[in-house]
Length: 139
Image 1 (cartoon, rainbow, N blue to C red):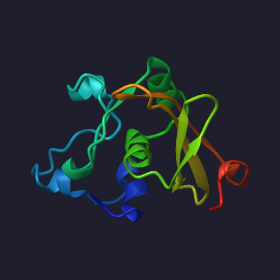
Image 2: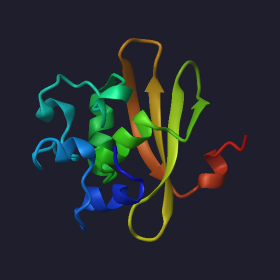
Image 3: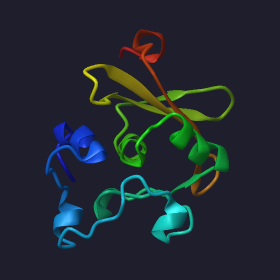
């Protein structure tokens, strides 16, 4: 894995901060912005390390929203693999969410709506919001 402080830097390639899976590949790691279909694993979610691999399929809508909302794929992977919170949503859907720095000095809440009643789970949509207090659940 890699330290959270490197998350933004890796996504925007501003400094040399490589996770262990890239170092093990001699710098030839997967593109963090690529969709799963481009990575050659049939739409299944990308785990950043083998020990914590979880399977997720992205809906077409979720893939389009990543691009439209300019959310780096590595951020989606981070939230899916290590969510700060998982909260209930309408019906049976769950929201995986984490607060992340997008590099402009402002923290956003990245929310990933997941239908985990099927296997593998389906990512329905993904978005970021500055309204952290509205969605964050204090425990």
